[in-house]
Length: 274
Image 1: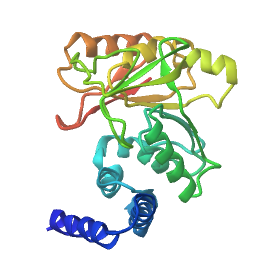
Image 2: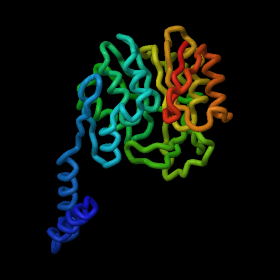
Image 3: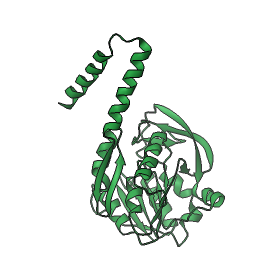
Image 4: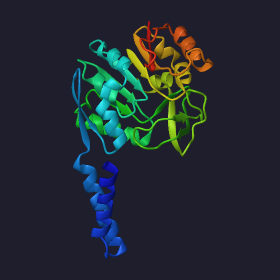
């Protein structure tokens, strides 16, 4: 039914502009498209901490928004336990669902890192429409193993897309990313970022990236081993005994953390405590 309705709207738009010269027709169709985009471009989602509003110019983003923090119950529960005045670094912030959710907590500040251009734009829009600019700082950079210029190999460039590798064309499963676009970008190691800019130091860290988890940890040894970093949550999928995942566990142990068993095999993340 939805596809049929969409098709009818498209046909009506083309029919209503029939007979116009090419330039006028293009301008009119653009106005129609802009009007459709702005008719309903936000979704309000109720959470345990209050209402969050999300910019949803696409069906994909609307689906993410409707799920909200419930899309990852383990991450949501972890955020709900953040202490007052915690500083969360959200590495791989996507459209900002968990950055925004954390910012609902009393006194919590968030540094959100999202290198994908379209997702970063939506992330900032979500910060804006929720009035959270005083609590969330968003940066369009990759946190990586070293500070360098490189390419973000993207399987999907749309806002909310996934399967992106900075300086690599393999994902967390070791599979080749079907790159459709290579976005130039800058990467910082966590330690270099801290030394260069003196940002609020993290007390809690969330890592949700597509394969460079170990690289990020290696680039943040000094920062992440500090006793002020009380807890971390890292997306670890697939076989926990794989070489890739065991490297993450080894590095986390070196930083002074121990992983909890997953509460459900359906959960995608591992919580690490000092």
